Length: 110
Image 1: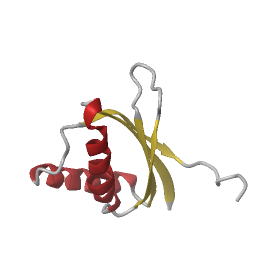
Image 2: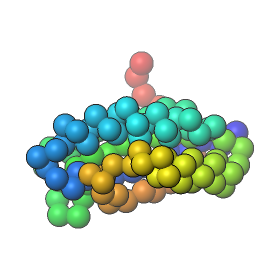
Image 3: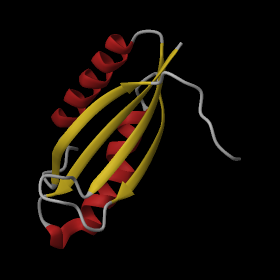
Image 4: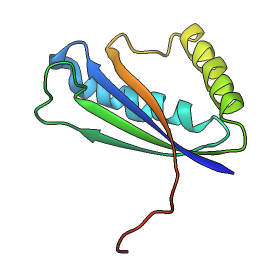
């Protein structure tokens, strides 16, 4: 089983509606992603002072899968269903999405 980290940076298209954007992200986007087999956890962060071209919001998705291609294909199919249901927010602006394969065990204090 391989472990991956999906790092997604986003912005809100209307800073006056960030509360609405965050509510949608927490109640629709994250649960949608967690419906995908292999996407195990999500953690969100906010950059209080992003540089030009950076996302204000960061979401880390922990993925555990035998087949990353299949996992991401299922997520894409689920995304299309979400769009057809009209549940994608126009406030969400994708800045970047990157995948990293875990190559060592987690080290640190508990």
